[in-house]
Length: 374
Image (cartoon, rainbow, N blue to C red; front, side):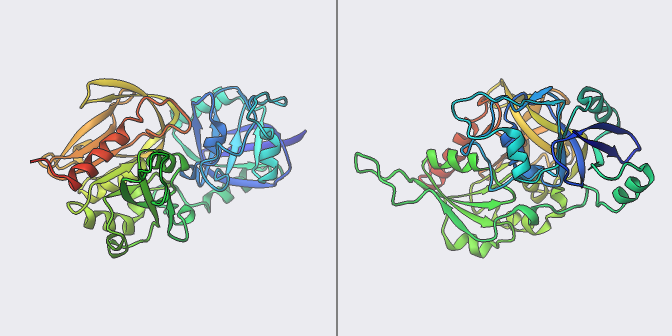
């Protein structure tokens, strides 16, 4: 076994064993409370720049496969667990988790007291940390972390957005009865979009034109879309001013739907403020109340920033979803324009499917714009 340490910027450290000697890796340390979905977590671009601690004690029991990835690669900076499962069992599995991490050169450690680590992060907050298999000197590790930029103020979207525009779901698709399956053309700003969002929009009859995050309103308007989607992604929403400006110009011109970072960007475009949460919301078991439908759903979440409820211009915006753990804002709707966004991940990859109906609101907004009700 290879000795390893997770050293935090406040001086706390946790020892364990690395699955391979990859040297060092640093990032913001956060914990995830999901019991399953580790492959989706690893490949979620929203985790770029972060070391993820899984609170569930045994990770890897069903292996990994080629279908459950949410992007083209693993984005986490490091992976911390209590114990890796050496013997996976699932008919869909093509590989074990340990081999998957080694193949992708991800620095991962086990044998860590993840309950104590999670408790520490809950009390002290998410913070910078470094996994090392070579350097165990607190002073040296502290100096290295001092040079690491904080998540607050950092633009990670530019690291994960697509380099070129592409289309998901072709308009030429035709059903067996001869009817086209594509009903709506959606322009999507890729801030680190998960693939399951694309799959759901395609299933609902959308041809999705995915644009890099630095796209302009002129480029969006050129395809004459029925609606605009703003995706999830990593980092501080206030740092991506170029996306905020583009979205601001689209308000009132198109139906707009945002998820996670997209929700925060939309809030900023509408005049609200955002702030950093103490330890964020990361997991697949967060209760959220839908104030429109008066129902409660268990949701998948992954974010470290939040829209400040008190900063919302009440004359134009209303809160439609609320987190029942800490009463933070989870969803907004514009009172005049077809604009709607949610902090949680209704596509639920990984997680429960309680909130997938929210995509239907976006479809209805586009339908109403195309065929206005008289």
